[in-house]
Length: 426
Image: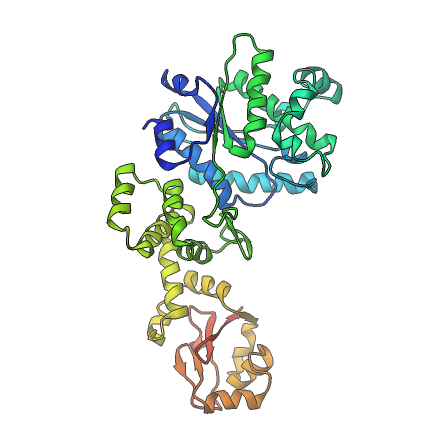
């Protein structure tokens, strides 16, 4: 695989410094992308850059994930219209540990391959550096006028830019030099909004290291067809952590995407070959739904797991299949029902109340408040609207026992076609 050819057909190449393509033709190169741990999880937007590192590694080059243990404490002004709220060191360190676990799932860090991925933390570059050393060693390299010329700085001058965020450019430039010297790293990559910071790094290296040549490569910022930022939904980011965005919601994000966005999303995120993608685009040109299903399947399996992908389909069956029977519901695993509990209203109830086989009426009016009153409960039964585990309730005096639990802890309640609830006993 040729790295730049791969980026071109995918539409993922935005800009690069002169000589970058020629440098890669000489053999294996080392390149990095930095990630600041400002959240507990990476987002699908971050995954664009993970894909760049994946393609870099599959092209035979060595990727470095540089965790921003230091830069995360400062805040990058790029793409922001106001000052960031600084997070505590403890929160940043916790986020960093969580994100490292995600990177290890997506890149090969542990094989004996010469291009296995490396993980570095830039806090190690500054741990023993005091402010005076920083000003002498780092601050003298780039002039203020040079730094002011960068869009990430110019765009913030009117709204306000602290010295803290102004210094971020220097930190990122010095990071590049440290990796250049310690890891023979010649490339820094990132989104197009990082061009100013990255080229500050190439200039920093040029001025400080004799005959040194470093290179910048950037990708377009991925946006939807309507111009909105990618990875945003009405509820916020699409996270790669299952506890922040469930595998079901993750899958549904791709299924519900605008038809016009799917070709771009596919080229950015698939690991299929160019031939396979172009064949699929030709064969399914009139079937965007099928294209969405294929992309949703590939990404759900990769980001989460094949088991989660299977569970997602079962969740859809539980939520939307009107012909689902009690037997089929009982065949669902606890993993599936746990997902269901995150997608519909769920109520926690003490398992102990089942000892005396309480009435269904008391559970639904007193212990879960699904019904506001006993009369409302009775009307639902009279109207043949109430189901327990997909079975219509016809007896107002029905009772609930442990044998009614699905997967030993769940009971599904439906009141009419649209009102679904899950009782969770523990």
